[in-house]
Length: 151
Image 1 (spheres, rainbow, N blue to C red):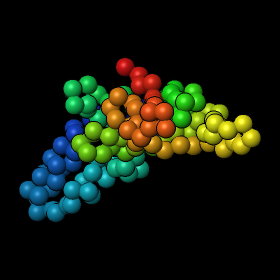
Image 2 (image 1 turned 90 degrees about the horizontal axis):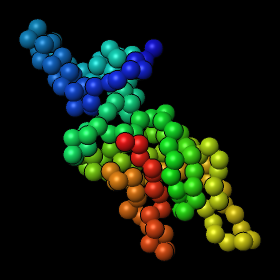
Image 3 (image 1 turned 120 degrees about the horizontal axis):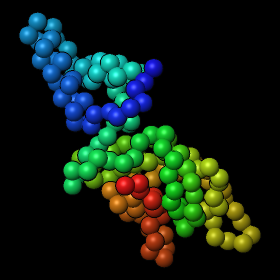
Image 4 (image 1 turned 180 degrees about the vertical axis):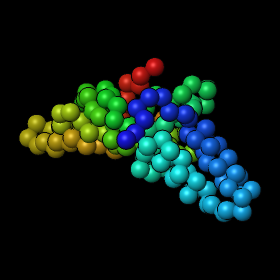
C-alpha cells in the first residue's frame, strides 16, 4: 500500500535516511546510505527507493516544487503532433537542470511528415528542461518534445 497524499521532497526524504543512519550508528549498527533510502521508501509504503523518488516532489531552482509525477496525465507536442499521455518514467539529471521523461501516448502519433509513409509512435522518451522543452530540435528549429507543464 502506498501513500497517495502529499510526499516530502526528495531532499527531505534523503535527510530522513541520513537521520536514520545516524541513529543506528549511535547503537553500533552500520547501514549504508542506499539501505537507509530503501528503508525510508518502505516506511512510506513503496517497494523501493526508485519508486518513491519518482513520485516525490523535487524542488526547482526557484524553490517551487516540481510539478511532474509518475502516473500524471500530460499534454504537449511531439515532432509537432499534439498528444495527451501518461507519465510512465521520470529521472532527474544535473541537480534538476534536465529531466528524462517516458510517456505513453493515449493515441499514437505519426512522426513522419511524408504522404506515402507513416511511422506511428505511442511510447516516447525525451529529455526536457524545466521549461518542458527538449534541447533537441526538428530541422525547422522547433523543440522535438514540448510538455504543457501544470502550475
